[in-house]
Amino acid sequence: MSTEESAKGLYDSARNRLEGFCAYQDRSQWEAEEKMKGLGLTADQEEELMIHLISNKYLNEERFARSYARGKFRQNKWGRYKISQGLKARRVSPECIAVGLTEIDEEEYRASLQLILEKKNATIKDKNAFGRKRKLANHAMQKGYESGLIWEVIEKMA
Image (cartoon, rainbow, N blue to C red; front, side):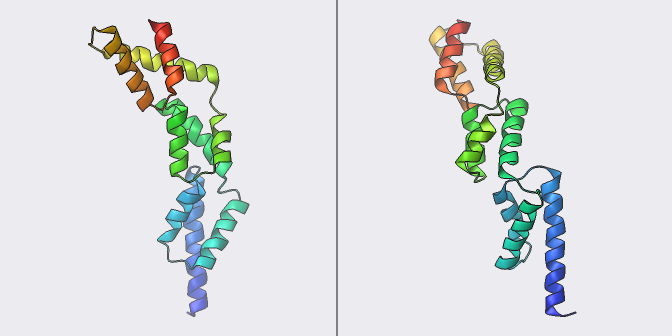
């Protein structure tokens, strides 16, 4: 087998693996690039494969940002800040992050924060009102909610 044939076989194998990787769940371009690094492709082949994945709709940054934001909010009850940090870690563009965050309904977002705070409030043993509120706020901030909104909801609970 010639070098050209083996390079073609390597490319085809890498293309099939990455198509499956991207079809399984939405991925960011950075995740696909990271997966591609260990496959032994040349820089030209990597670029060609990335173009193939994007043009055949295996990769779409906006779709990824939307599904990531939706999933992390609905499944993990993450706030906007933590979701946007997760997208930044996956090197998603600021424009796509903004589009992804539009998937979160404001009423559902506030209701989710309210529920998180109520559940946490039931587990806090601190009798001091100030200490209790501080613990509630810290818990919600770790989940990625905005401090202004957190304090607004905490004050309505009291």
